[in-house]
Amino acid sequence: MDHNERKFILLVIVLSLSGIAPNLFPVAESGRGELSTLAVRYFIPSTLLTLILLYGSTRMHYGDISRQIKNGILGGIIGTVGLEVVRESGFHLGGMPGDLPKLIGVLLLDRFASGPNFWSDLAGWSYHVWTGAAFGIIYSVLVGQGGIWIGALYGILLGLGFMLSPVPISLGVGRLGLDFKEGYQFLTTVTLAHAAFGSILGWYIHNMNVGLPTLLTRIRKL
Image 1 (cartoon, rainbow, N blue to C red):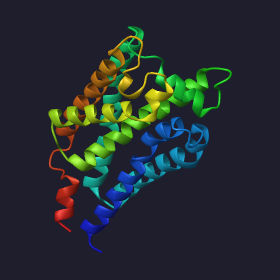
Image 2 (image 1 turned 135 degrees about the horizontal axis):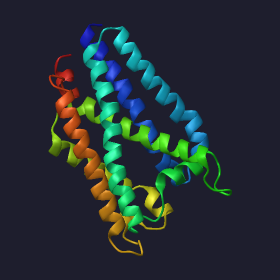
Image 3 (image 1 turned 90 degrees about the vertical axis):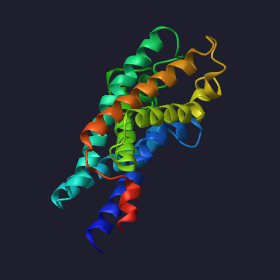
């Protein structure tokens, strides 16, 4: 097995691991498991394995792989900050039915009856931020360098996927938030927030992933 094949397998594993965290909340909201249980079984192990593979790629001198993963993580975190500026603004203006990171924290620590506290908020925000990092890794690996408009489209598609998931139904606003009592504010807030996430991510990756190939390019080299 040559270097290109090893790198490809490593990236496929990282992509698979990165897809776990973002799906746990929707899976839990669909009634297929408790988020607290899913986090222990899947979220924590997948996150640790991703960081171990990042360290391993550095040790193996796969600089292009480690750059793509690190840039994805940082780009996703920075993009999440942009998303939160829009989401928090929308939330305080009545465009969201609740504060999702706090809700996630309550579910993670099984505090639904007693409500949020410092530790549940910390857990919820940690999950939320890592979800952004995971989406950043996926984008960085699949797109390579990309551009702002590709990132914006990616973010909008993520927002659409979120609004078509079981989460809006569990929040009582229906698919795409069309049952929200305030009208289209949920749909607007989520779309703008994810567009901000994707645009920032796309800008960051475009500037940091210079010379790094897309996953399709790597496949062609096998």
